[in-house]
Image (cartoon, rainbow, N blue to C red):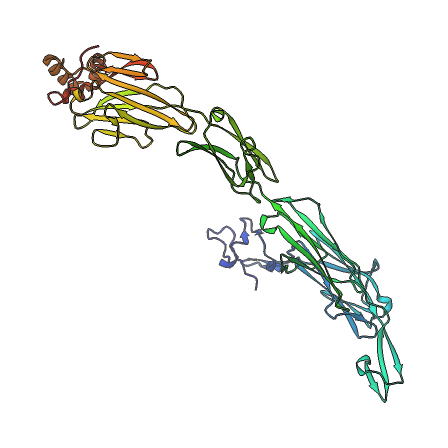
Amino acid sequence: MLPVVTWTINSNSPPDIPQSSKDVLHLEKDGSLTFIRVPLSYSSHYTVEMTKSGLGKASLQFTLQVFEIIQDVTLSTPSGLAVEGTDRFILQYSMLQGVIEQQTWFFKSTEIKNSSHYLVQQTSLVILRPNRNDTGLYSLQLTNPFSSVMVYRNLTVFCKINLYFFFKVHSYVCSSMFNNWCFVTFFCSFADGPDEPILKATPEKIFYVVGDSVSLLCQSDGNPQPTVEWVFNGQKLSGALNRVLDLTNLQTSQGGVYTCSLLNQMTNEKREKNVTLDVYERPSGSPVCSVLSVNNDSLLYECDWMGGTPQATLSFPALNSASRGEGHFKLTLPASANLNGKTVSCQADHPVQQNTCNITARNPNIFLPEMRATVDLDSKMVVSILCVTEASPPAVVSWSNDSGAIANGTTYQISSDTTELKIRDNNISNLILQIFTCTCSNPLGSQARSIQLQGKNTLQSESQHKRVVVWLNDKRFFPCVFWIALWLCYAFSLTCDVNIMESINISKLTFGRTRKTSLNLCTCVSSHYRSLKCNDEV
């Protein structure tokens, strides 16, 4: 039942619309009724009634018809074969969706009207007492204001011939027997086929890409016309009964074997034809190349381009033309001088797109260590030495001093990437005169540098031995400077940090050049008389 909507003009109260219809019906301020996203169920006759006190009522009726696009119309014969002499034969249509405003049946392009021989019903055409003259092409046109569809069906009407034999024959040959008379019934139109089907894809491609569309057409002659059934990877496709199978917005899951199965319902003769559709999808992004170290004596070249259907085929033709992999490819080679500085390309082949990426293996470059000195919260002197070099694969850094290899402990801490060594000690005397060596290595070579800490604020470099010498002093710090600096630190901390720090320096080496790095004066003062004395030389 359709809802009743009421509203009082110029009323402050909203229109009284049933809750179930508020998404569809909307009453405007001028009394107009608006339909929004109208369902099919709202097709009906409507009445507008206006009432004014003392003047009576006025009403008007209108009809709303909601239509739908007509899709996937098929013709079928629920009564089976058309045989001459039977009472009636039915041609019936069905569809996936649509609202029909008009249906028109045609026989050999001539419109069919209701008569003593034809009866047009709501969804079917009835042929009364069919005969051999009813054999031919029938068509149906369905229309509404928004769409029109035409479908066709060839019909063969079979006639009967009765032969009588007055001799004894096997009973299974006879339709019936009476006093040794054998009654045999033949159809006057011979059934044959289906012929060898022709299966064609349009457009025809070696493979299809995700998002493409394709139509499969299955053609075959027979008498009567064979019925069509589509099978995909061994599973019947429900609703796919036409000779044309349309596949839109293809996905990789739709790639496989499609079978057109044709059946002659009279002879039960069956034929099939297969076609294979390949649906591909390119991997996302671009291939990525890398080179890693294996036991510091071999190089592991890697190429990665995952995803896609099928997976991309990857190879390093310049290194090994016979070896290849899919999606992720690895190739290990012994380190050799000819690989140093050689740019290697990974060839990534996919049916949709070909791509490449490059990688170059290099031995460690010459570098200069970087050093800085600070004071930690426990008033320990902390000297940090950083050894970083460009190398591919990345270099591994090992550390040593006069006593041999350095391992992590209380005094020495090596960073997780091995590039930084931190030395912590209360007594600078334990740091000076020692030589610390960092060695950066990968399978293609190594570079080593040494650093020596000594007692004066002077920087020396010995290129022959690849050594950097840094001088520190812990003796000279005047008491007057201490008290003045302490007062300035706490009274004018910012000014203290800027102005007084400039006169208290420790030399620092960064990327091959010497620069002065100021220590925080407040830190120096707070640690006075413990273990660290700040250097007052410039």
